[in-house]
Image 1 (tube, helix red, strand yellow):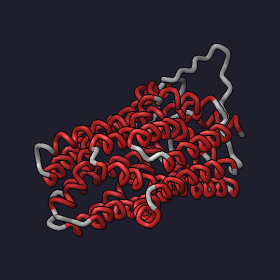
Image 2 (cartoon, rainbow, N blue to C red; image 1 turned 90 degrees about the vertical axis):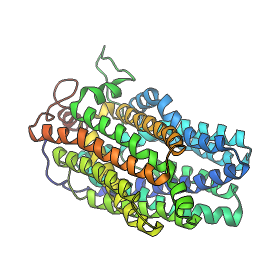
Image 3 (cartoon, rainbow, N blue to C red; image 1 turned 30 degrees about the vertical axis):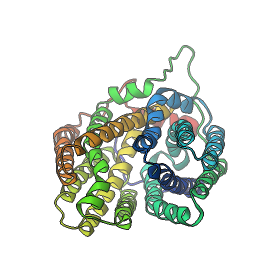
Length: 424
């Protein structure tokens, strides 16, 4: 597959992308507010299991519902489906502001993320229909930039709201933000409709998994990202201890790490959105971004003061922005539209498994070695994995091994070109 820089959005595409980015961005911001309020709710009660449970509640539903959520997203019209899910998210999110016990909080967080586990693949699969196939990288850059802004502002505003009004107000705001996201979806002019299946054509909930395994490039990237996330994710567990115990940093110093990362993510996303959609180039930049993240994490373990971590977090955030935009664009380009919901749900489940594993491993490792050493090993292993897995991928790309690959007749991108032509 070859492609030059994207021709640019049409007026309708530009309008829809901006509407979805702004309204979904407000929803992301609400999530940041809620996260602060929820952790501040359970942490003072001394329940370490509840703090860990909040993290697991955000991950496990994506794993459990992965096959079903992707299949549903591929079989229904996107707009009414996502609006209905947004209403459900609004109800559950608001309920979190009403019931404050630890048990009720955990149950509601699980329920909320069960709904989100269905909406996320739907929104991911909708994006190419909204932006146009040739503009996926540019649209991804916009959405990742919005997410970076939410990463910067969410914890800050969440802390301010909790301090001024208590824990319920941020959760009510988060509930309202889901409604705002649903409204933005309803205002879209574009929609994603399920494709007609031929009589007798098989359509399985596991087609997304089969695609990730059957397409050699997607399989290589999935393995790389999974092992990388498992390695570098261990350092996330050590972060709070590294700042507050090793360097005796304040809560503000700890919060500034997330803000620094968000700033870098914005920069990387904006930069990536201008690079076009050529698969080989985007794959190289994805792998390079992963390598840079690993090096930055390892260097965090070598600093002598908290302030020295911030520029490294900016670099890591920028590399994450690059890897997210470029990698997601490659995954979309290699996947037929009819399977994109299932592909994204399968990939999200894989990522969540890596995060769960990293969280468990991080807790175990921190009981044995110091936070600084965790950063050295985490970043070093992540960098090594990116070299061992990534360099052979780059070598095969240079030989054109990945150009036509994957299940079915022709490459996924070629089949999608035919689907797009039929829709037009």
